[in-house]
Image 1: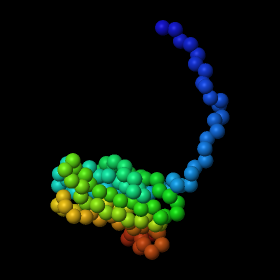
Image 2: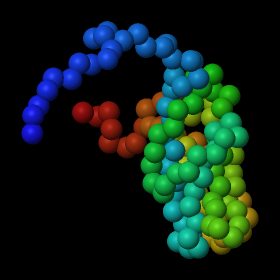
Image 3: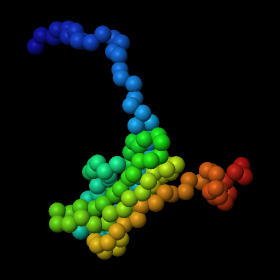
Image 4: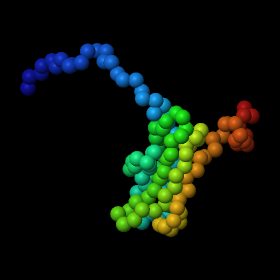
Length: 128
């Protein structure tokens, strides 16, 4: 086998495009798996566009202005259930919880982060 040098088709400094302004901020989305999922998978919608997701914690890019609408619903080949939507606003962490049964709506709400204004600190912190 003979090795030969490959020349890179681009110069060392490649001009890149500037960010569009729609993905300047990332939020954390926690998808809590219910006890009975009936083989359902979560789908996250950002401003009406659906994105398949997995159970657990993930980060999603949203617009910096806080007007982004995030929704979550569960889908299992037969039906769609557990839909919930919320406007992001200033939230950094959102948590989704589905209902106990595979019918009805879910709950999507911001999670308070300790140390932020309006949120009490946990006991024992700050005493160091």
